[in-house]
Image (cartoon, rainbow, N blue to C red; front, side, top):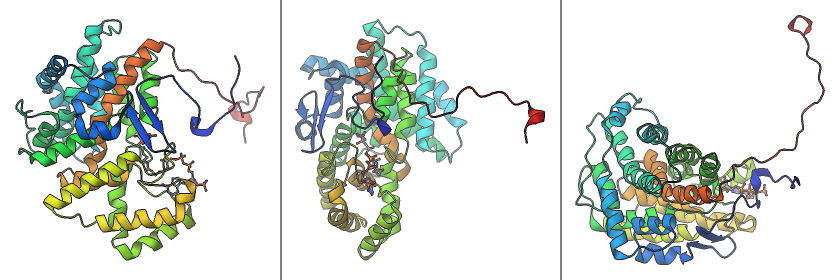
Length: 379
Ligand code: SDX
């Protein structure tokens, strides 16, 4: 076995061969199955994009209608999972609740038939259909309210906002939320997708795969950054404070949330689209108080850190969109998870075909051939 050179964070190390999505970090290009994110955001829907990612091509009209019907039909939660949620502490983070519920779903479908296409299809539908209901249900229950049942008359994005806010959303808000889900659906081998792949490679069930990925996405360096961005904008407080804030971050070598990316060394194409979506919402529902601070932050960082390839990433403007949609800050990352389930499942399916367990090696830096010192003889 040849040992490759060690790369911290596996930077630049191919971990798989995949045909699901393509990113060019220098040109700011993102394609799902060869279709640009700009076209999909403009012309597709999240469910159609999920079908494209998972099954490899755009569905025919009957295929899409069948997929949408199956998703609508499986949105409701198992009563036992709702009962389990009643035991969760109200102050717990919704990502921890989601991880627990995703894993618990596996208890109901424990027979792993990974070679059965029907088992795979059922798992894809159940996870895509039920994850939004889990997020909305925990949010209402932690406020002491009964969760709202899914509304079969509403499409995927509108139904989530309905279950969360207990009222039908404005059509523009629902359409913009659906585009946000498409933008967050997939992004090659990011940390949470890699986590999903490693878990999938042991041939465990897809519910455990998604639970692993949810736990990984929750971190502030990954999916948790969108929540941190709003806290940061609030902490900065005014346009005048932006430049001193950035100078202090640079002096302390601290990371500025919503900026920088392992792959993009230009502005994340998703950030560009999300910024336009935010402005559409501001035009209809009023400007966000933090938007001017965000614009100034992008300007100052472009002056001071562009040479390092530090630009806004997907998490920088998403929070400003979600605030206008009435989504609370600690649900920003669960919303990211709702979308990324599509990408995780696409890579789970692709990993099953690869059928090789992940088991990298290491460069050992510890001691060798040490004698055991009995407790009585230790200092
Ligand atoms: C997501 O991988 C994906 O695709 C993820 C994602 C997806 O769709 O799945 O795109 C979603 O996770 C977006 C990223 C969200 N995270 C954040 O916004 C947190 C802040 N960002 C940083 O922590 C950082 O940019 C990372 C973690 C995103 C990337 O880290 P890297 O690739 O390890 O960056 P690096 O350490 O190689 O940075 C290169 C230089 C360094 O300077 P030097 O040490 O060379 O002098 O750029 C600097 C870094 O200090 N830098 C930053 C910075 N990010 C990088 N400086 C200030 N603020 C930042 N945010």
